[in-house]
Length: 252
Image (cartoon, rainbow, N blue to C red; front, side, top):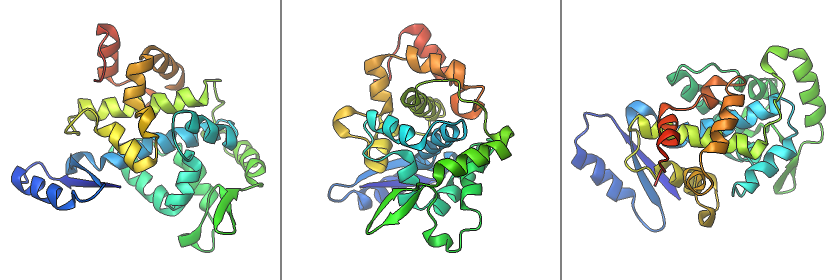
């Protein structure tokens, strides 16, 4: 449903648009991004999955995280998405994205440890177990997480009590603003398109930036002020957000 074409800055614009047209068939959406910034889907996915893993490491139950994502309009929670996309592949992409932005791997330690020792890496599941042709929440996850937090207190800061849905939304809004400020997107709607077409957010609800326009930036910005101590990379507000809040501006 979504294809992304990344091209280096020196690539002829006509060539980029020719590739864009070649992929623009049927119901597929196509985005153009700069190779220097990495794929937009990787950046927005890193925000979603990094925030979810931070919640989990902080002691928020897995089912509450999944439910919080669904209140934002996601068809599946981020932990379910990690396993459906392939936990090993997702971890590899997250590491690449974090390294490119020189972001500490803190939130990824939990996922890495969870996958350690898996016999079949290609079929490894981090948070679910097979249930016929579907997946079901792993009933042993809660006990494993409790032991992991006790063993790795440096990677498991206490959660400050912020609503999980607000925490996820704030991370996505912040990343979308960062991409806009970096001119990594062709249109301001591109981060929302990535989340709707690539990650299953409900189209009628709109993406995270559209939702921020509807509900206002004040709540996400207040959440970031609290959560930046949990993960500065995820929740330190983009200067663009500070300017928007100060001037009463919207994304659209």
